[in-house]
Length: 123
Image (cartoon, rainbow, N blue to C red):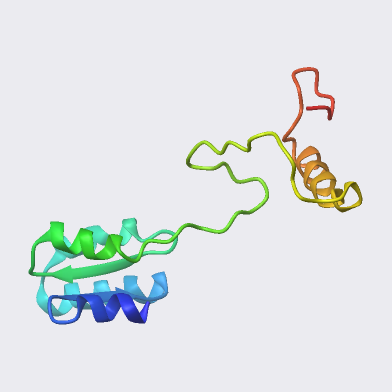
């Protein structure tokens, strides 16, 4: 986050924080400036949200922000945003080391993933 702030220094200001504090700040700013239009941002504050205030070119801001984009770590039950293809072949593991994959398959069965149309756990 610190590197992102450094990248925007001079051109833009980044505002990050807890949503309740950000909502409160927006309400106070709206009262102090008599600008009720800014209150339209309040319903948009859901999840992890941050604001970038700029007077510069938005395409440049988007490009600079894209430099810092990283992928999210894999978690059980999430659907990949892109197709993931694992080619058949040697995994480099002994047969005794494949318990990890069996455990993953078991987790998927418990969550309803990996079931075929008849509802059995095979698949």
